[in-house]
Amino acid sequence: MLFTPFEIKETVDMFMRYKLDIRTITLGVSLLDCVSSTGEATRRKIRGKLLRLAGSLVKIGCDIETEFGIPIINKRISVTPIAIVASSSEEDDYTPFAKTLDETAKELGVDFIGGFSALVHKGISSGDEKLIRSLPAALSQTERTCASVNVASTRSGINMDAVKLMGETIKITAEATANRDGIGCAKLVVFCNAPEDNPFMAGAFHGVGEAECILNVGVSGPGVIKAALENCREMNFDHLAETIKKTAFKITRMGQLVGMEAAHRIGVPFGILDLSLAPTPAVGDSVARILEEIGLQAAGTHGTTAALSLLTDMVKKGGVMASAHVGGFSGAFIPVSEDEGMIAAVKNGSISLDKLEAMTCVCSVGLDMIPLPGDTPASTIAAIIADEMAIGMVNNKTTAVRVIPVPGKKAGDWAQFGGLLGGSPVMAVNSASSDSFINRGGRIPSPIHSFRN
Image (cartoon, rainbow, N blue to C red; front, side, top):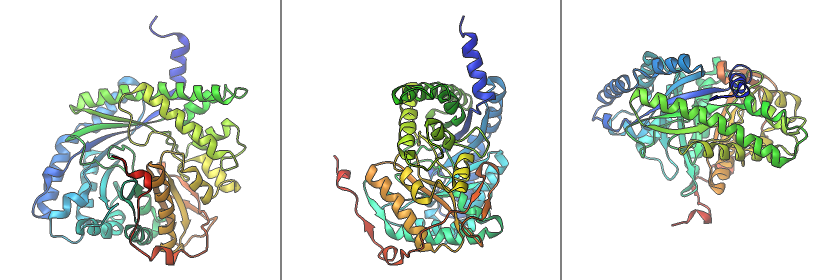
């Protein structure tokens, strides 16, 4: 017998009861050969290449869903950072590039397209600055285009000029989408050590070291991990860790199967599998509830960082056992508005912005989908970014900031973004000023342990 009745039931339960899914299949496409002397010519080539290479992506994803019975929630595209592609044109406003990406994504039927991005961790070129200055208009005038800016790395330090600029840009972007609670900022991520093969939005882009076209997969299964831990309530941490690792292994194997099949049908190489526990606002699909299952009364209480450290590490270990090509983030996401357990923790006061920052030392990304008061100064937002970039730089890990200063709202008010982005109470920020710190400019040097050859 190939599979036992127990194994068959376990697999069915993963999908039907515990919300296991392929969160995304993301086709990465290089746009380097689309560069032309004019923006119009470049955009025409971008559209043509995306239609040619990604034309079958959605259909193949739907076919695999039907044949394998495995939900694939999103079909996405990531492209070469547009600041690189658009820099040869003489245009000062890159919003038309964002619109071309958006219109092409809509035509292809994909959910999101990432790569309206710039890499400025060591300095800002003219093309980078043009893209950053274009972000408010680009994100307010598009629906599916996502953006990211890498402002720091372990090797180069933190570009504080870029950090200041991003604080100001986030404020302007929020105002540009004030009628929708600043939702433009939900499509904008600020990174330290941004991975070039990340399939998750809003930070996905296709790195210059990647192949011409490649398929990356993002798998998520918080509910499956929680269900497995429900049988371990009397067990010690050794048994708990082994259970998480074995469960992550099973989830990863499923993702590997889907990823390789999708890549084969599209006719491109399989890139990486990102095993990240990415929650949704749905009950039973929460990372916070996993932490509570480990033994915490509420996410955010003392012990939360230790529990999250255990969870993230075991997920990674299970993933690398199951696939030779694990990449992206691979760990646990802790977005506030996208996790019903996190939302509950904010409501009951057990979790704060400071505690979330501490948790990012051990999770897979950073401060994610956090609504802030609309009157939060740009310098305070920049300082929040700087703190998170320092955590990533010193710990040689990817960290990110995706915060939304919600126009007209204060701490405790509700912000609603919809769909997978969910909604959350606005979180309070420290009222003391960071102006003088942010206005120094320059670059915070890389840590001593970055000098490795």
